[in-house]
Length: 445
Image (cartoon, rainbow, N blue to C red; front, top):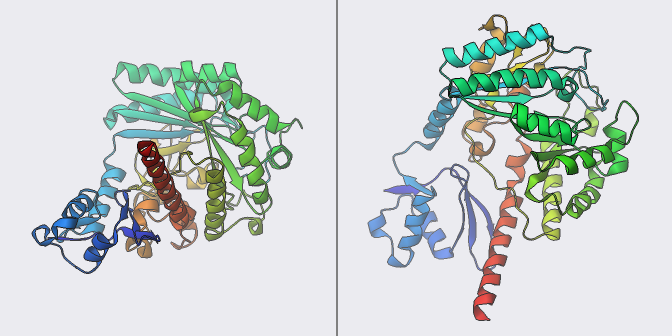
């Protein structure tokens, strides 16, 4: 006997009375005819042997893709189990390393406290030894390093030194090694990109652009006073063949109207293709280090509407664009796992990069390793808000950012993506039907 999945979400119903159904647990999306849809809605439980022949194949397909599940399965408990496996069962050590908190930009919304600090050679070596010991002691089979700051490329020698030592160790011990970097892009020349790729095995980077040239240069302010937009775009052009580049575009009330012009500019970069992508993200005032006016930040619901409109505009320019598909996940954030740490320039360990530099919130040091203090236990015992447990969209966000939840007494406005994903699905449906029509027209000809 089967029942409808708790995670089925009806998105739209079109003129043909067909429904678009999305399952947030499996990520499956289907256009369901009215007879199949009505049969499922009119029956709490379904026995395959009783299903009319004309829709039996549809019902079998819906079971295959998770729209229908065994009537005895507890879907929420299944998700809890999978979340625990993802949280405590992974064999990858994840380190986000800030070799410096200094930066060559002075962006008004930055939440980081740009202390004049950089990682010493002594701390770098201790970090390498800590990593080696942690990998072997816990029998990890994979190491992921994310470089962060500040501006990490200010300390390219430290990045190279640590990377080479860990890559050699991983090769000797049959441990997979992966790495990426978050940089403002000013120092990412072609030579630096090749060094990162060949010596450090860094295959991807994230760069921030905040609007067209005039807008970006008022927000992404280079300390040398130069045109940061042109320099960043030129560097992306020069480096795209050496690494995948993801452009994050920060959006708030001051620059949101300029996003359409920025999309037009990105569209004109025909040679970027699949090597460069971009996405929009809200500016958020999360930490005390951030002096940005909270009134300039959008709420998640406001940004969901803005992001949906931007996606529709992108689609109007290119019907063949790759539309971001909602992806289920088992964790809200990897930092609630015991094998994930952020390392500051002084060697202190943290559970979240929002806490970097606040020594009172450390959970250990590369000298002595992790300690199970109050801060560490708070992250390892974190539970998503109760209201999220029952939500049929839970697999898309898993309750949102743990840091934001804990800062707000376990209350959180729904994440903008879990509020606005319907637009993505509507456009995916339109794209599918458009391609179907084209294929039909070709067959007729």
